[in-house]
Length: 396
Picture 1 (cartoon, rainbow, N blue to C red):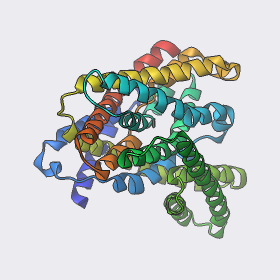
Picture 2 (picture 1 turned 45 degrees about the vertical axis):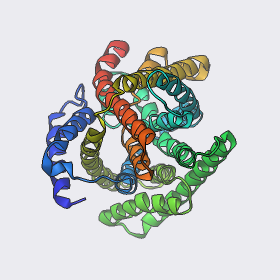
Picture 3 (picture 1 turned 90 degrees about the vertical axis):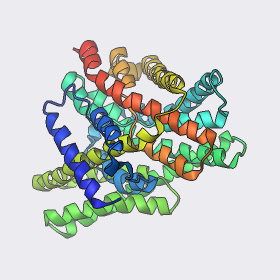
Picture 4 (picture 1 turned 180 degrees about the vertical axis):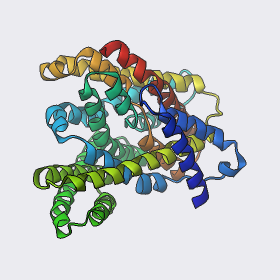
């Protein structure tokens, strides 16, 4: 991708983020995505090429590291059980239930294989809190909702990619669906990636003492973010989960060993600017890429898939949080409702869609891509807009 379009997209993002002064009822992801769709019809931008590698290897590692490093460790200690459940067992339940529902609904409109339905379900499971967490923190008196949402997103980005990789290979090779194969691959790649991340994060937290220059320490954090990701991917493990683990370990060790407030401020300031810059480019690119797939004949099916995805997530979260007394005391049904609605789709889903596009073509593949993009855009727009009024109504 040429440098000039990136600079223009970054400037557009700057304007939109500047408008978002109060961080309340201004759905930045939705606005950026809609602007990106509009830019597609500008000849200069219509030829911009976005590949899975750009999103996965360039944009995602830094974003994931930023969220992991800034995520409060105390929040994970308090809600670790629920976060881990939603991002692992919850992912598996969601994919199965949503896949079966999509397969049944598709039969009313067109022909779609069951593994194709599962592939769509997998692409619609990762959540992307982005500005939603800021909206929740502003609109409610219960910050734990934002913490659970962000913690879930950090882990399920990695676990959903593991499931997606296995299901995509089955879809492309037309091989038999093996639940044992999926679960073994899921456990190996996820646990291995997390272990590598914790190890590298700890090693670099010790190496940070080799210099007292804040600028050099910030440079080292960039090495941690992208180095951990690439080492894990090279070993066939989850780069996302490795980066999450490294970021959290780094944050934990710094909080325990380093009392230098200025260093934390330097690190926070750098990654905060990085995050906003990348998010601007990312959501504009989502709109640019999606625009080419929005003209198809099954929009009603796409709308139904979006509705069912919310219903299944709500059923899963509300039923499990209210069934277990430990979680029920922390997350009431109102908070669970907000948590369900706030599961907006984003960058990881787009990476998966582009991976399907790159892997092959055909009528079913094109249908899968269009249906997933339709449900993703509806999620970005409708759920982003609805977070603030819903949270104000239920939690004030």
